[in-house]
Structures are given as C-alpha cells and as structure tokens.
Length: 149
Image (cartoon, rainbow, N blue to C red; front, side):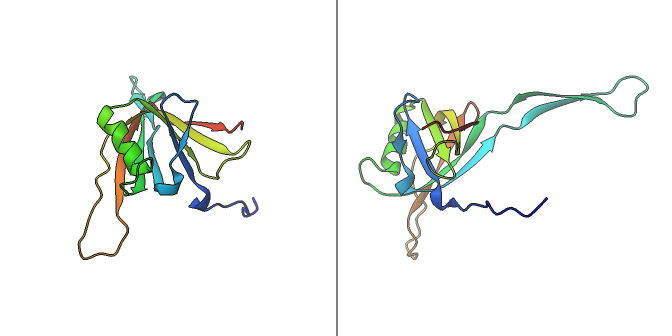
C-alpha cells in the first residue's frame, strides 16, 4: 500500500450541539478539542469440555462518552455558557463532531446524551495560559455517517 497523502490535522474540526437533532448550534469557535470514548464491543468467551481454546463472541457496544475541551468565557451563547446551562438543566442533547469540517460526504459522528460536568476551568494564578474547561459527555453511542448537507 502506498503512503497516504490524505492526512488531516484538527484545524477544520467543527463541534455542534442540538436539543432536537435538527437545529444545530456551532460551538467550534470556543472549543479546543473533542476526545470521544466508548463504543468498545462487549466480548465473551466460554470453554467447552476437552477444548484448548474458547468459543468467543461479541455483544453490544459500550455507551458513548468523551470530553469536550472548551475555552472558558463568560459570554452568552459561547460554549461555556451553553454547555453549563445544559448541564445544570440536565438537558438531553445531541452532539456532533465533524473532524474535516462541513461538506457533503465528509464524515461526522453524532451521539445523544448528557453533559456530565460543569464548565469550571482549571486556574493557576501564576499562568498566562488561556482558561479552559473539560466537560464530560455520556451518550448512547457515537454513530458515524456521511454528511448530506
């Protein structure tokens, strides 16, 4: 196989949230990263009499999860404000990540779940670093699809 020439960086990442899965709010401008977890298949093994190796199988996928890393601001409508409001209200949401940006046939991942932590930033008085918050996500499971619009 020849070496790829289609590598990507995170510069085009788009992150969106939605309360209904139809109208999406873009939080990319105040988001730093998305680290998805979950989706591992449950596995099973059972040995039968006289065998040296087990009979194996796979079951359902583990729930989705992850961390959204956002820039901490106190501006209405930016990621910290929105995500903290959803966390406080325990709002069932849709989350969507588009690693390559928005275009027909580019991949996207979507999940339905809850933000599980507030947007408190880590703060060091002696640092000049931008304040960021890591916000936990727990969902049913990330689904990959091609964008249609």
